[in-house]
Length: 327
Image (cartoon, rainbow, N blue to C red; front, side):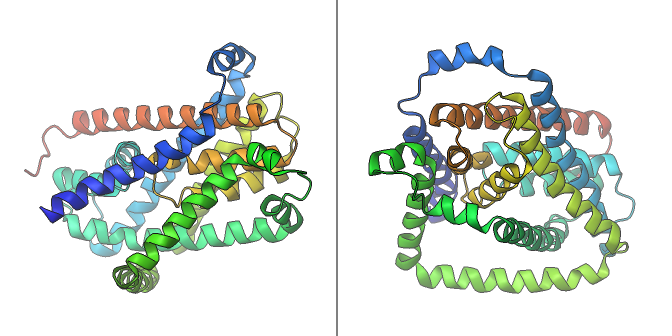
C-alpha cells in the first residue's frame, strides 16, 4: 500500500506543483487577446527553433550507445537507441522521471539488454549532464553577474505591486524553493540518505567514464545536446517582435534560468520554466503580458513536438522490431 501511495505521489505532486505555479502566473491572463495575437508570430523562426528540440534526443541516443559498448552490448542498432530516447522524452512529459524506465524497458524487450544494466549506464550520462549544467550556468552567471544580481534584487522597481507583477514567475519559483526547504527539514534524515546514495552513484558514474570507448566523441555529443537546448530557446526569440532584438546575452541568461528551474520536477518543467523565462524577459523591458505570451507559446510548442516525436518514435520502434520481442 505504501509503495502504491508513493508511486501515486510521484505523479500527483509534480502535477500539483505545475498547476499551482501556472495558475498564479496566468490567472489574470487575457486569453481571447492572446489567441488574436498568435497571427503576429513568425512561424518560420518558431519551427526552426523546434527543429533543435529534436536534435537533443538524437544526440542523446547516439551518446547512449557509447555507454553500452563497455557493457558488451555492441550490436544494439543505433535506430533503437535513438527511437527509445524519443519515446522516453514523451513519457517524461506524461509521467515525470518515467522516461528513463521506458527507454530501458524498450531495449530489454527488443535487444535483450538487461534492464538493470541499461539503467545503470545512465549514471555516467547523468554525471556528465550535471557537470555541464553547473559549468554552463556558472559561466553565464559570472559573465553577466550584474544582470543576475539585478534579476535577484530588482531595485529599479519602485513598489511591491510592480515587483509582484513584473517578477511573478521569480516569486513563484522562490516560493516553491521555500516549500522544498520546509519539506527538507521535515524529512531530512531520509533525504540525507538519498543524497549519500546520489553522491555514491555520482562517483561511480564518473569512474565509469574511463570505460567509454571514445571519450572525446562522448563529450562532443554531450556538449551538442546542451547547444541544441540553447538554440531551441534562443531562436524562438526571433519569432516575436518583442524579443527579436534582445540579443544572445539575454538568451543565455534566460537559458541558465530555465535550466535551473526545470530541476523542480514538473512535467517538461511546466510552471518553473515559465516563471524563470517571464522573470528574465521582464527584467529586460518586455511587458508582463508579452513575457507570459512568449513562455506559453514556446513551452506549449516544445511540449507538443516532444510528444509528437515520442509517438513517432514509439510507432517506429514497434514497426521496425516486430520479430524481436524478448517477452
